[in-house]
Length: 356
Ligand code: NAD
Ligand code: IPM
Ligand code: MN
Image 1 (cartoon, protein in one colour):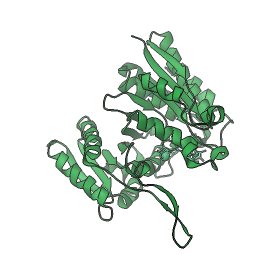
Image 2 (cartoon, rainbow, N blue to C red; image 1 turned 30 degrees about the vertical axis):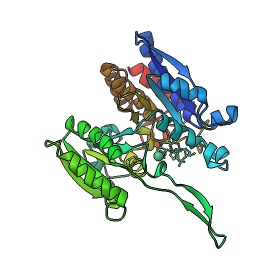
Image 3 (tube, rainbow, N blue to C red; image 1 turned 120 degrees about the vertical axis):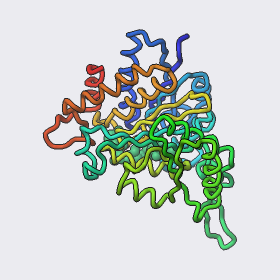
């Protein structure tokens, strides 16, 4: 049966980078991949047209889809809107409504980019790390939240970091299962020395690990983890962490791979139905210039083929094609180094397509 992919380009560089990933999906469709592509509005683009960053139509079509490809949301234009209708709310809404609790963010260094990283080549060479980020709980969604006025007239902003055992267990299982197909090591990142919610996180991970005798579980405080990621990132196999810590650590990890423009992600529910998106944002500072790196989005499409569409061979082909264009010296501005050939967003997409 034809699998349905919903494409949500979003804002800023979103439409530019998504177009390059779609070129590849269309090429596979010509070859016989049985998928249909349907477009929807999200984020600021949706707000401008409909007054909400997540129109019901988008939500309904996404719920019926097998997979979703998303660009990015947000931008200067919408920064002063009420937080309830900001573009980011659209993204958070779709993650939550579709129960996409497991966010996989693989940080893999293509050896050709060792020089593009701001870290020393020998620190990052051979890097292959998987960050498993809890995506539908924690401080992003905890209640109560808001801004209130205190008795003395001063305002106070507040958010709540909450995790229940079932939420910790289900993300923990994802991490342990992934580790069992890798080097068998999970590092759980928390702030259990200060925050009760992550004290429970640590206890629950420890108990869960008893069901996974072949996996080695370690724990690390998030501040140390941030430091270790830049000091010696190759010590990690799988990292599992909370929504906010995972957000921050994955941006940090992306620089190990040369650029934030290289890191794809998959956000999965219990049935591996998923949404696929680069980890970066809408990059309003470079939007509309055809200079953004489309590789994170193209690699997100590869993750879609692997995890939801069961087309591992096609996913492999994309990853090999990316490697080939890097071998050929093609670089968007963010990963450019001397002696390489600087290309635009669309030239990079075309080159990957040609290398398939
Ligand atoms: P950002 O990730 O958009 O950009 C950070 C920096 O990285 C910028 O200098 C940008 O030019 C660069 N960059 C990002 N992606 C790139 C790419 N593919 N190629 C080359 N350079 C790239 O983060 P920000 O500036 O903090 O946020 C901008 C907007 O994006 C905000 O509205 C934010 O809320 C939103 N955002 C959305 C998502 C998402 O949709 N998943 C993720 C992060 C941020
Ligand atoms: C990401 C983004 C989002 C997040 C924002 C835009 C809501 O930073 O996907 O990493 O914080 O999860
Ligand atoms: Mn982020």
